[in-house]
Length: 224
Image 1: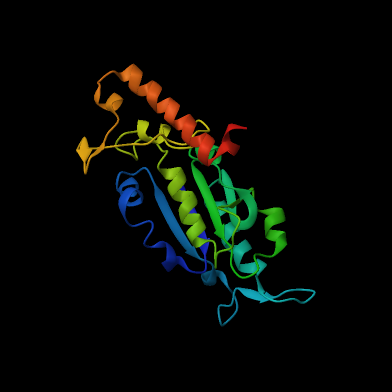
Image 2: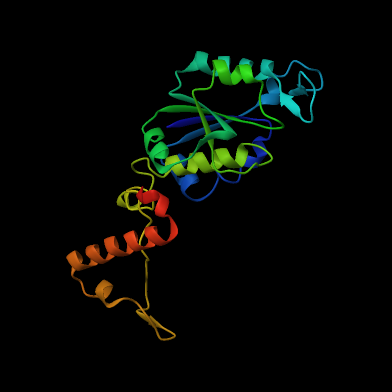
């Protein structure tokens, strides 16, 4: 799977993609990430990529020319399943969206800045707009890292235990049940006996019960 990420601050993404699961996925050949600096496509001698808003108002807008130039260049090299724009007013990221995107081959992600991008880019190039929550970040880079991480971990072969991702919270509209590890008792705090019983039917029933209980308490909206 390949991600092409368009940004004015590629250095913000060096860290998230160079460690842990993201790095291992690239080392195994499951993942390719290419960072593209939008400033490299600016024809302005100062490499500016923003301008004032038409109609006035506070805040600058990302210019259309360099973004279109890089999108057209990349589209000429390969077909993209999605061209995603990271924006606070996009569709809030859900696990179902991550599942769908994990089946794609080539994804382009545009990271917004300032007051956003010229609307004509959204109208003519963007196929999906994603938000990671009802708040505003300084730019789309950290949000893009969240999106990539949430997708890549679902690619077969990325996680050591592929069933792990299938039992995560939200996969079945439930939160995950409590989990425990050794020792079985610490400071008088004991692991539930059923988890030590070896009876996998009882363990699974317990987990389902606790998952439903936790979801009712913390995210009842998921049960609707």
